[in-house]
Amino acid sequence: MKTFKTYILIAAAALATGGFQASATEEIPAVPVNNVKVQQNGTTISVAMDIDASNVKIGSGREVVLRPMIADANGNSAIFPAVYLAGKSNYYLHTRQNDIAAPDVLVRAKDAGVIAYSAQIPYQQWMEQSKLDMVYDYKGCACSTEDAATKTLAQLDYTPIVFTPEIVTMEAQAVSVKTNEISGSAYIDFPVNRMELYPDYRRNPEELAKIRATIDQVRNDPDATITSITIKGFASPDGPYANNERLAKGRTQTLVDYVQGLYSFDRNIMHSEWVAEDWAGLRDYVEKSDLEKRTAILELIDSDLAPDTKDARLRREFPKEYAFLLANVYPGLRHSDYAIEYEIRSFTDVNEIATVMKESPNKLSLNELYLLGESLDPQSDAYAEVYDLAVRMFPADPTANLNAAMSNIRRGNYEQASKFLDKAGTGDQVTYARGLIQAYNQQYDEALKTLAPVAAKLPEAAEAVAQIQKIMDRLANTMQ
Image (cartoon, rainbow, N blue to C red; front, side, top):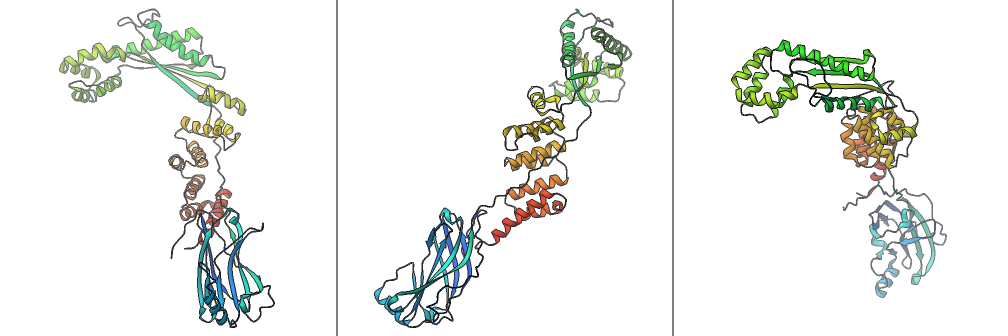
């Protein structure tokens, strides 16, 4: 049997119990109609039923005409092809006159048995909510109408069932302190083997300006409070290790003192660290280079040899490469890394949060972005923008990923939503979101299995299950 597929629009074929209204036709028993099925297939609507005339006794000069009809409450109607169930005389009268043309059908009552009826007509919009009636015309001799009756066979409802689950975001945990950091590197020149800092020496004006600009960027921000400044000095691997350590430590402290003197910062927020020889920086350069003996040099750098022994072998075994590194790489290994940690005040007014989001989004916590998002129309672009920004700023945070997934589900971006859910953990809300994606993709069986474990805990999941079940129940009533 041919199968018609529909998308959510399903006909509910509920048989009515109303009786006939005719009185002059008692000699013609009611003609039972069974197995009524109705199918809306986009541009057409079809009916199928079994008209059981097995026990119907119709006199020779009588007949009953069965006309399936769709009608609505506003007076619209459409007729399907009719079945003429006729006694002997009327049957031959119609045959001689040839007055019943296809698609109507003439059947002699005596030979009718069970008639497998099926037909289709064009679908019209008014049929969305309607009913299927069977109209019986009772006729006597010369086929004149004596009476008529109507029986409702099915109520039809093609109103779209729209899956409208609740899209729930999760509130991010508020943080009492928002700590940020800004960092950089400076290349301060010191006289050979000395620790005195000369601000105007060689490229020092430019490098010291970089440090001041970074500090001023935070210091002049009314929303920020500096809590720590750390300067970490590095020396290059050439020369004796003990001397390099002395220089790295002393020069770093000199730079710390210089910065503290510029701003009169509390000594407690100033910190110094040092690395005697920046072998890590040297290794990073060599690994990315195309030096001819790159592999052998890397093996030496990675060895457990003492720093001075390592430096001596590097100079002796790779003189060409060592000369190049000494001239072009080692100067860059003598650097001072600086990091400024600071706290940002909290924001509670959504209008202020919206302004900060546009100007300095890095000042906002995930909770503050959540407060802004929930104040907006969930259907708006601004709502989606907030949660897209949140997951970019906090890419590893499960809550940020869950909320981004929910935002994308709302917009129909189910593939992208699934990617965010992969980083959102395994909580009940994540399970709920996965079930929604399956339902939106019409994977109803899978969606019910996914949502079942959380339906008792999440009201929104229970509601989604009810909607999905309703859709599946209607789909079960379609013609196969």
